[in-house]
Amino acid sequence: MKKMFRVTGVVMCLVAMILPLTAYQSSQAELARRKAAVDRYRASGVFSEKVYQAVMSTPREYFMPEGQNHMTYEEVPVAIGWGQTITNQWFVAYMTHLLDVQPTDKVLEIGSGSGYQAAILWQITKKVYTIEIVSQLAAIAKQRWQSLGYSSVVGKAADGYYGWAEYGPFDKIVVTCAADHVPVYLMQQLKPGGVMVIPVGNPFDRQTLLKITKNLDGTVRTERLQSVKFVPFTGKMLEKYGK
Image (cartoon, rainbow, N blue to C red; front, side, top):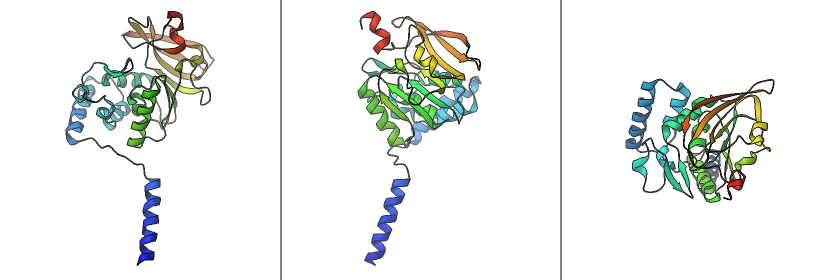
């Protein structure tokens, strides 16, 4: 009997090593709130089905700062500390829609923040790379992905201005902070046929959301979509401003 117990214990340990450790599950109330939001989006008919599914599958409330759960589905940015914000859910869905992420795509995100945008991308493709300049936020986001079982999200604390050449080139790049120009490193790391979505303009005022497509011959097509206001792209981008 003791021998059987030891064997069973080993099997249980092996199973635990194989299965993702998920420490968080949404409550029924949270699922209902999320479904109500997704139903509103569906009624508008703006996004693709894979975007609706990604939003529905991602527990947004888990990425909210403590004490701000009531703001989870308010369509406004919410401060998460260190001068950063979590973008409202509709706009995260919109940027994901613009990228038209495919299951085989390799995606780079600049500005991990709370980790929510990367989590949405992970629902569509498991090849997600993300950079956050605030080391504390990078660590918090990593813990959240691991707790949810999103183990293939690869993140690091660094200046996203330089991209991530080690893992490039990328099919899609999304920038979630305001730049006064498109970093050349990001353009170099975007594959021919790839798409980048980035807010460009005055980092301290309003910007224009751009959708940049790199054609197969290396030329670039830029679409100016709408006026937005994101937090500034820090690090190298702000050196000229003495920041």
